[in-house]
Image (cartoon, rainbow, N blue to C red):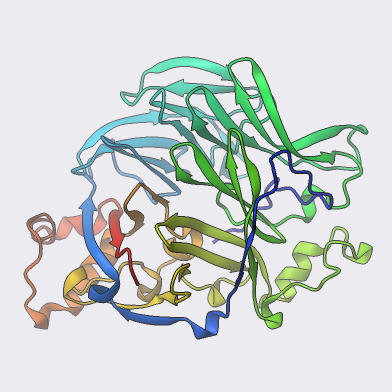
Length: 406
C-alpha cells in the first residue's frame, strides 16, 4: 500500500484565535490495552452487500460517505464516485473525467455538503458539485482550499492546506480557514509559505484528510508530528487532547528543529518505523474516544484503540474476538490478511455507528472456515452466500455499533 506525502501543517508557532480551553492529557501505553468478546463490546453489527453489475463494479473503497439515504463511495482506481442505497442497491455513478497523472488518478478525496446535499469534486481553483442523482449542479470557488474540506455549518466549510517551498514568494498563509458565501471569514495557524521550517516534502501523511467530523457543526483536526487533537467549529479552535506515548514510540524532541533532518524526515521515519508520527481514526461517542497512532511500518500498525474517558479503560480493537454477536465473522480484515483497515482505519462514522469494509472474497473465506459450526446467518448474508459468483463481487460494508459503557 502507498504512503502519501500530503500538505499538512507543521508551524512551530501555534496561534489560537479562540478563547483558551482546558486540554486533557491522555497517557497511553498500547501494550496495556485489553480486549474482550464481541458480545461484551459491540451492541450491533450489520453487513451490507453492494449490488455488483457491469456499471456498478469497483475495486475498493478509498472513501465512504454515509447519508440517511445512500452510501457514497470513492473508487480511486477508476476515479469514479458510486452511490448505493442503504440496502446495497446501485443508484448511480459519477465519472469525474480526471485523467491519470504518473500512473495515478488525480482524484483521491471528495467532500459531501450534508446541508445542501451536494457531492463536491475538488480542483485547484473550483469545485464541481453534483446532487445525489449524479446531476451537475454548480461550481464553487476554492479560495486555495479545495482538497481537504469539511462542511461544519450551513453555508460554512473548514478548509485545510499546507504548502511550503523555498521557491515560493515570502508570504503568509493559514493552515485552516473557515469559508462562507463571501469568502474566507476566519483563519487559524498562520505560517510562511517560503520560510516555515518544515517544507511540504518533509511531511508524511496517513492517506486520510485532516478533519474528522465529531458532530454536525464541529470536527476534530489532527496533523503529523503533533499529538494534539484539536476541536474545530465555526466559532472555536483549541487543543482538546494531548496524547503521550511511551518513549520507545515517541519522536526525538528535536525532530522538528534538527536542521540536519531537513528534506530527510520521511526517510528517517522509514528507517525508524517504531516511532509514531501521526494519529488517525479520531472519533468520540459518549465517553469513548477512538484513535490510532500511526507509524511508518504497516506490519506494526494496529487496528486502533478505544479509550473510555470515564473509566480510563483502554481497549485494543485487534483484541476483540468474534462470537455470536458478529456471526463469528471478523469486524475488520486485519486478521484475515487484508489491508483495508490497516490503510484506512474506520472509513467514517455517523451519530451512532462506525463503518469499515472488506472484500467479498474475504467474507466467503470466513464462511468456508466456519462451515462446521452450521451457523444461521441473517437473510441478506444467507442469500448472498448462496451464489458463489458473489465471491468476485463488490466489497462488503460493515456497520458496527459499540456499547456506550465499556
